[in-house]
Image (cartoon, one colour):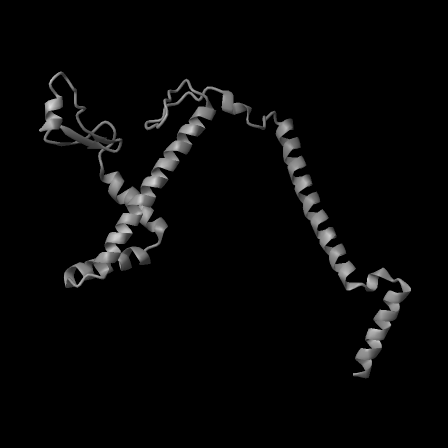
Length: 195
């Protein structure tokens, strides 16, 4: 007990005499400033080194390429697009497609989860067991393995772009998608809607 009082009085006496290195708060702030300066210097050095090496090799940086012609087509687009558009327009098409797929995925996953959850609570023994089997199967298989299954086992079994599966010689399915006849509306077609 006496030694702690002696240490406290020694620290108090040292801080009273003006020795700044005895102040714990000052040391904490100093160490944090040194660490922050080290991190800033590290990133400054890495970025500077990368820019120097890119410049020596003649590789341009920046976003100027977004104004260049893309030169490739995109199958599905929510906004008008052709291969003469710029990379910036291509980015917007990709962003729109991503938002569409994400929105549809959220809605369909919510509906599927709601229906399976209701089915698990059902009093029907078979429906409840099938829903439980579905949940336990997909819960215990890693998502990456499920993606590999759907891509390699299911999508790879569908014919390539030059071949197709035909249903009634009207509907055609291949890896490019499902092709269905386009309705041609002529005078008098509105009666189909009325019917």
